Image (cartoon, rainbow, N blue to C red; front, side):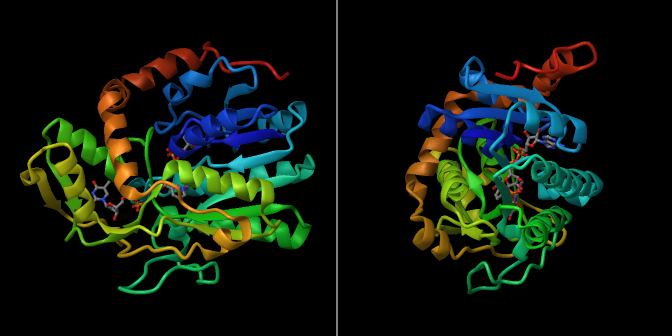
Amino acid sequence: MRILVTGGAGFIGSNYVHQLLADGDDERVVNLDLLTYAGNLANLEAVADDGRYRFVRGDIRDRELVRGLLTDERIDAVVHFAAESHVDRSVEGPEVFVSTNVLGTEILLEEARGAGVGRFVMVSTDEVYGSLGETGLFTEQTPLAPNSPYAASKAAADLLCRAFHHTFDFPVLVTRCSNNYGPYQFPEKLIPLMIANALEDKPLPVYGDGLNVRDWLYVGDHCRAVDRVLRAGRPGGIYNVGGCNEMKNLELVEIIVDRLGKSRDLITFVEDRPGHDRRYAIDAELIMSELDWAPTVDFASGIDHTVQWYLDNRAWWETIRSGAYRDYYDQMYGDGGRHDAGPAT
Ligand code: NAD
Ligand code: TYD
């Protein structure tokens, strides 16, 4: 299959590119990524010279570029990860979320449809459902009630996918996954932030009372779910993906601190996030029964592996935290730099 992955230099996208190239011999993987602050080619160093892989620095909102890529590369399927993804940033500045997540998705959908692409997987999120109380689970029938600007922009994109299927019979598939963790997660998100701060003996900022609940899934399991949906999902289908692994933030931070042998005194309660969703929990029965998917990594081994990865790859996150990786891309890909790392084959 010839696959266009958008946002493949980010956390989940890069894990997916690695998985695709490790699992399949006859894949062609084109990675279209703008390299915003969250995109990092260091995540893909190991596959950079793989003949089946091409990186293109570019914007999903660049219609001409998208059209050219879909045609020149004879793309069969799009797997769409590219997004602004951080809730806190969406509280500070929602506009880029609407532009990238909504308009970007619309342009991709329109161009993919025009190019006759056979499958379009939209990587949506469980945050489109809003917040749960003490009990209950999100199912695919739960009404959408996004609370943050991030979640609202993802819900708009998710619904555009629905509309493209309903109106044009375009073969869109949507995944709505819970919180991911694992290697290459940008250190502004809860788990890598806490690991990095703890290793530097810095305060660990827990929002509010720390009792908000998230359902954590190892990133490799999410990638396998996306791939199952790509290859075997029902066009127009929506699939929840989750880890059956609910945890309070405070509990999770304590686990990380303990694993690192650091003092729990580093934990610092800070002002709550505005509009902070209380609880997410996923009913993933549909993808389990229909596509025979299930999480394979239990939380204890997943978090051990993740903590170890951040210990072993200290230079990766220190370079990000110092901002040095951005200077490199400005040099490589700024005006006069190298814009595209490989021709169509
Ligand atoms: P991320 O922020 O780590 O990566 C996003 C990537 O998209 C980056 O490489 C960035 O450079 C790229 N990008 C941003 N704007 C772009 C544009 N205009 N054109 C091209 N590329 C652009 O995000 P992530 O955590 O890997 O999430 C990937 C997707 O999965 C997102 O759509 C997110 O909404 C969804 N998701 C994430 C989680 C999670 O827990 N992280 C859970 C469910 C769903
Ligand atoms: P995050 O990783 O930002 O994911 P999301 O908001 O998309 O679920 O945050 C996960 C949870 O951790 C969320 O309840 C907010 C909380 N949190 C903190 O308590 N402190 C922090 O510094 C961060 C980044 C998040």
